[in-house]
Length: 586
Image (tube, rainbow, N blue to C red; front, side, top):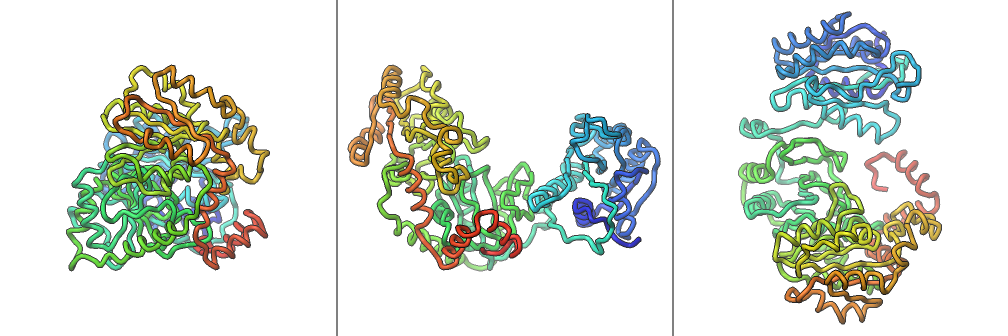
């Protein structure tokens, strides 16, 4: 036999083990791991050793790892075979020895259902392994991406922070087909540390590349970090793609909201060579295309949001940008990429027509007037998205609960912020998010620095937007998906009496004229009490505003793509794209 198994996760693991220089494997007898073991036998890279007692195998791995300083892998079958690794893995854990325990396993659904040798390996004793991952069988492209991330993470962990044992539970279909002639060329993710940078082992970054620094949710930037990023952008002709919660205010900031949401137009500026990813979970459009992504994060974890990660830099952001800027050659760049972004943004914003009375219109006519040094909190999805379409004054900081990305807690987060500052803290929330956290308005600690916009459209308008699956069902989505009809059915009295009794000033508006007439009061940072401003809008106007903003610019290719989707449907379009290739521009 001279061929490899057709099980994709087996082929991927072998490819990545080679890339991460893991060649020694101690194999114990069994059936569940046949696909892996027979395939490894066909590849001269791997050095296989046999040990019929798994207890002994684990301790053999400890001895090998201690002697060579290299990671050593173990492979066993189902049932209690893996349990016998625990003593040796405990030894490896406390000695920080890089031992990789690969336990092959059958379908998880068989556990507890009377099948032979189907045992639960989802939880490991705390002092046996640094990390345990469950690697599924690969059926689709998302499975393939997920397995790649899991395997890279596990193999990197073997050497991380002094090293230690790692567990990989590898699912199998028991395939008997061995017809693959070669291993795939899998994406390898590498971790770069301070020590690597000190030793000069950092990846080369060309000043001729198109580089985007993509900032997710980010804390306040201190002056040193902003100066480091500005200096880097100056040397590398880079831009900083931001939305409302990125909070970078330097001269290389470009707004990704409007540019990123165009469905029938792909601006050339969105085609980058490298994305440098910093910050946390974002709701900004992730439509920038790049050949690879470098993630900079002090925790050093893989966060493969763009599915193109090549490196993770385990270090402070400031250190990364300072070190690369120091190594750049020549004079500052001509800022051509920044100028391209500014041109695109100006073209798109100039195309905005008069919007219907909606959250988007309110954002457009309010955000630029927010007082200096104020703070803006937004409810997730619709409010956050619409208020990120437009630029706030430079001194205004933005926040949203994107960590868990749940509807709950927006008002409470705003309250917490307002209690720690004298700045005016603004909030904008849809009615479902507002009522979900309504009890927080009764808190006795509120001061006079709170301003809340309640956008009351009577349901979850997110589910009525053109890019939401609920949109396909029209009004049928209203009663249960969009939760229409709760909270007084847009009552004109419910919130008014509630908040007035709590000491808030209450304002309301049903149209543009009413809103603009009272806006000065709402924005007054010297006003004597906190304010709740309830805006009654029609969900159809909300949907129409978003549709307009998504179609401000159109290209021939974009229009053709929309027509094809309309003709063959979303599922048919996905099939065509799969045939054309995942990197195609259709």
